Length: 357
Image 1 (cartoon, rainbow, N blue to C red):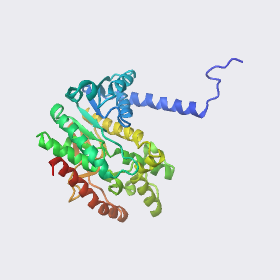
Image 2: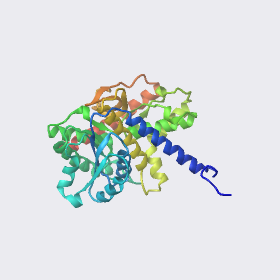
Image 3: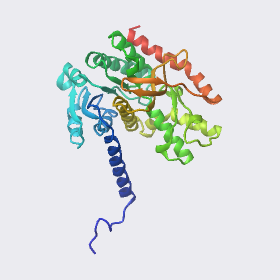
Image 4: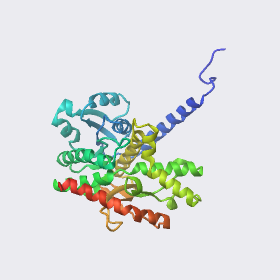
């Protein structure tokens, strides 16, 4: 008998693909319902890297983006050509230092509304955060200087690690250029939130998409503090479960590095988180109300630290309101107290680097 599409038994892979396509279609329809004030120009710096490539792909799918500029030291024209074939409205242009010289970065950034910066090297097995700092600090400083000169009013989303230090570097660099606006500089800690939501939902059998878990502090090790006491929907957790979920969230990056046997880091999930936060910035810029995300910003929520991550309400011009930590359990308060020394040191290290101290 002749088989038809409807008579073929659906395999698990086929079913999964069908659900994915349906989800993408629904998402696109949801986004397109927003009244767009104008097109937004978005740049991804480090666009040929492990985070940059999938992040660029995801931003190409965002209907609020009308111009997508991809920049890296080399290899970007090929990435841009590949991404440009996707049938969404964003126009894609690739720039690189190798092909365009100094003009590449300048042209990529000119009058951008949003700049996403995953540039730098990933952490590898045996590499200390100090090793990582020495390489990435200089990269971030140079890129932010270029942002100050070519798109001083853009929202900047810093992904390059160590975020606890690179955001203070960016802030000080922008101050030196006379264009610092604390409402428009963000350290992207969304991956910590994504992990906390996923691990919590899996543990308690909840629907992942409907779960929320605030994550405060910073974006490295013990400075990552998920607040499972404030998770919604509420589910009972034992002390041991809370401790295990907290430590897994804190060590999520190490878990991926180990699973990839030293051949990579958390690039795909980080790209997803980066695109998620970038989308939140664009939705807020487009006038959508009620956009709230956890992010690492200049903050006075916790005395003694100049930068800190909590929930932040976003608006057209960036930060509208920085929310407090909310009521903490004894376990969470101990975690907050325990991170202070490391967080302070990381912030100071970034400021000292930017000042040339």
